[in-house]
Image (cartoon, rainbow, N blue to C red; front, side, top):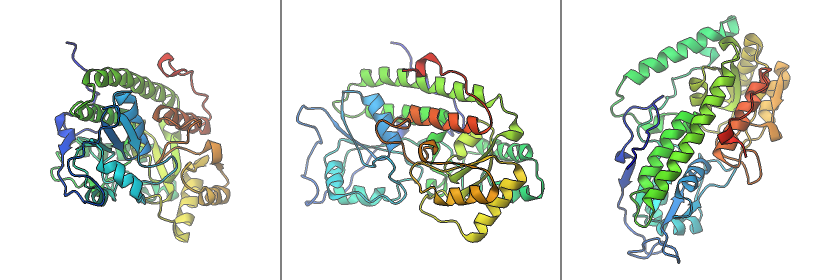
Amino acid sequence: MTSRRIPPARRVRTTIGTGAVLAIGVLALASCATPGASGADADGGPSIVATTTQVGDFTRQLAGDTAEVTQLLAPAQSAHSFDPSAAQLLALADADALVVNGAGLESWLDDAVSASGFDGVLIDASTGIELYGTGDHDDAADSDAADDADPADAADDAHDHADEASDDEHDGHDHGDGNPHIWTDPELAEHMVHNIAHGLETVSGVDAAAVAANEEAYLAELDALDAWVEENVDTVPEAQRLLVTNHDAFTYFIDAYDLTFVGSVIPSFDDNAEPSASEIDDLVAKIRATGVKAVFSEASISPKAAATIASEAGVTVYSGDDALYGDSLGVEGSPGATYLGSQIHNATLILESWGVTPSPLPALLQG
């Protein structure tokens, strides 16, 4: 039997293993679930529910036709304010497994599990990944960027902090206090995929061998994506790798490729927050001081505030079809309909904003 490659570590606390899978028992509510329901569909295949668009895509890539996958969040829907419908609670009640992003993203999850009576296998894709907290990767405001700070120095400071953090065991780390947007780093996405694959292999009725084969193939594509992004970003001097986004969703991407985070339109992990007038003024000042050339809106967030800030700062706003895919993947047929497509789209636009024409995609990512 061939051994399966475990993804390399970037911000991972521990070796990923079966700890990613938790069997949870909850009280079944008579109005939502039939006692003893297995969740198997009419054809005998297991039923898997995934929360977000990202983990939904990962789960479909891994499960193939060995299971029925139901995704709770629709494209462009925010996970921060999601409220599952009665029909979705019924699907969860009948599910054999539930795949979640974890890391505190699905704040509504405990209530949904309790209300549905779900008693299957919970697969947390974030297991073993060290999260950035609210004090990590502070933007240029905290390093006097408006007073001619060197963006490269800001990046070095952020990475020094990350190195120190990765040396800690972080016992008792509360995922609810961390930035949950871990999928924005393709290498961390590999760990998420690894966690999900091992969880699926424990679900009765799932073809574990097929999942393992799908995992190997998909990890190879994620490796190719990571290498392609890094190769292209490395053509840009670190001092010029500046990024302003709609909300603080790209911290792990920034860390992975040594970018400097100048700031976000919404100064929060939560895309439902709103910037104050003083926060808008501060961001405009930082954009002017650092030489940022663009402000990126996100496909799932109104571009109005981003457009206003870009206009005041005299820079380009990327919105509409040129918005980044942050909290959500795109609708079917869009460039961001899959995780791989969304990351290629995002990286391409960011590179182009720096004046770089990306190199051709590797063969694994073409077609």
